[in-house]
Length: 467
Image 1 (tube, rainbow, N blue to C red):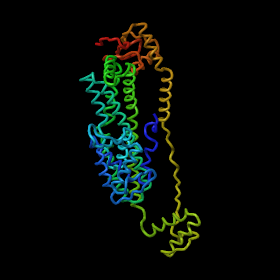
Image 2: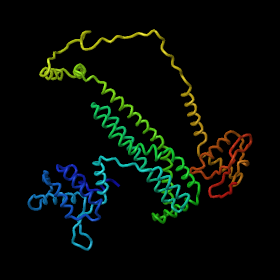
Image 3: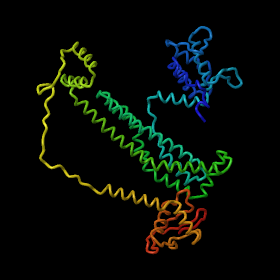
Image 4: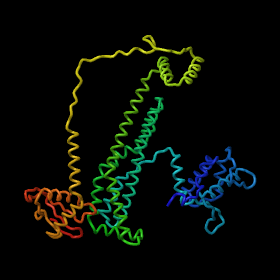
């Protein structure tokens, strides 16, 4: 559905009109009353509008229809009528009474919230989203499996908010980095660093790195979700719970939502660690750049000679006409003439080049790059030679020859390819499209000259007691 299929075409016109500042204040009053009152009485809203119109210029615009003289009350009613015409609010009566109320449209409520947040300079505190995801899944898994569906849905919502918070923090740091480049005043730079940036760091960055560490809870979250995917009884219980809550027309839609939610959380935590590392890098870069810029500005020559040097640097980059205008302005305040050339007695000292007879240092070429490329090539070859489809076919062949439950000592390993396929099957058994599960026992066994973990492979849906 497109935006203007929902909102009227002139919905945003109040924010682009000549009275946009007044209309913005009127919308903020509406938002504040919406937050604290269930029913907004029309007379109360008009009284609040009148209070902000005193000593403020309000010009009639095309389409405004004043009711009588243009008094404060008349202006307030013009504002209200414009909000009604543009689709921000509706005017109606309170149930079983003649008391008039105004109600914001459904689509206007999130817009009001957004406008309010844009004008709010205070930082929102970071919530423990990672710990909340872990604790919700852990509690549901260990104490109340019937509420696993709610825990998974909540985990997805928390993960979406986590990604949003991390990206907001990342771009916030980038904004401070851009400010360093343009800043020329030491006091302002210090204020930005020790007030604004520190406030953001204490509210968002510090909690992410300490009490809500992504790296601390990432593996347990992924482990719980992988266990859920491996147990058909839990998935069936979640489908039934979803059918009761959401009233899906069929079970396949409920299953699709559950799988999408689990896959989203798993995929997100595969990449969120890299995002946190990138934020760490930006944070370190900002700290280093801020300190260097402060040191540079404090060391800059602020004497007459230093100021004159800066003027001459700017003068050199001007056009001929701009140079003439600058010369005229300077002559009005100080005695200055055009300098056609520089010599050794001018403002600048001649640079003295130094020579060195030492041989240049040799570049020691390590093998780190070669090793890394070799590893990447090997992984690429494995991925191409052993795709998931080949793993599934290998396990299906084992089931065809040995039944639905196969123990490690009964697995035929005839070559290295069989050994690699078996290891990949153990690693990737928790993936959704794998038709089997793997139970790990303690220790290892020797099989056809290969040392493998003591495992039991069973077809999904087939239960087996593993000692």
